Length: 346
Image (cartoon, rainbow, N blue to C red; front, side, top):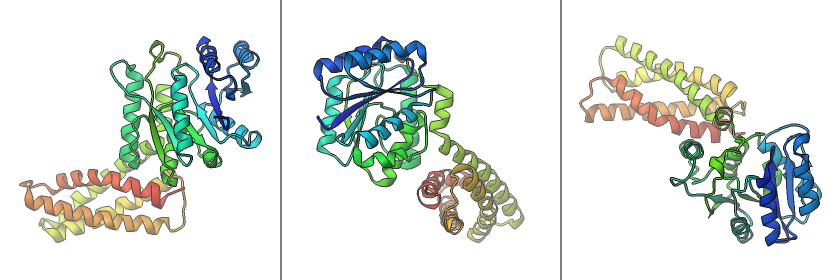
């Protein structure tokens, strides 16, 4: 483990941080420990001084609170700039929720798989606080629906990063809790393996010491998906209203009228959707994005028309507008995945 380092981001710590580091030192006197004080202020300096003087920790200090993501980036920069011998960085939370044996198990797995990111994965039984359980389940399922990334514990603070990924990890946007989610998405896009290592599930005092801001940090974590959802809802209503009007004027419901109405409605809504997604959601003006987007639109139109007509023939539903709503809801996630990972890819 000589080529490894433990990194602890900390904001306004209490006795649990000292107890955590003391426990690590009981097992290992020489493993480097890097603590990033994320702007805790003068009142907490005795804790950080004790970490440095009693336990030999390196302490880096932010002049003000910048966020957990920023603290991780500070540590990554320190390792890349000043610690060439470190090949693996283990991040753990400062509240004592991670056992030393679990840290070492994750580190051992990283050394056995040096081209992978390792996540310490908790189980979520009845003993887990509702806030933590709900947040993890929500993030896990949104990640799975939006990106296809299947991770059991997407919010774990126990992670191991190999040095070869650190420069790219620094370039990922996000300064607070959303950074941990974005790095998983980026890892999937880059084809980096993400491996899980089962760890103990420990919550101290109902996780009361967590600095996670339920509303603000949740919005940041899900921001891209929420903006895409807003864009899609706007375009959805434009599309359905235009389709209903065109079907009304065409009078007869057959394959040709459904295709004509779908084409006209989708052309109008696609123009609206493209500009909202380009400017608000993904913020990327990639070359040929308009051409790629309208190719996607054509594929969606054909799929939507075919499926609406097929279901219309099979099921005794007289209103094709309702069928179209159902079909387009299914195509929502397909379109999001293509736009995020192909058309507006960073």
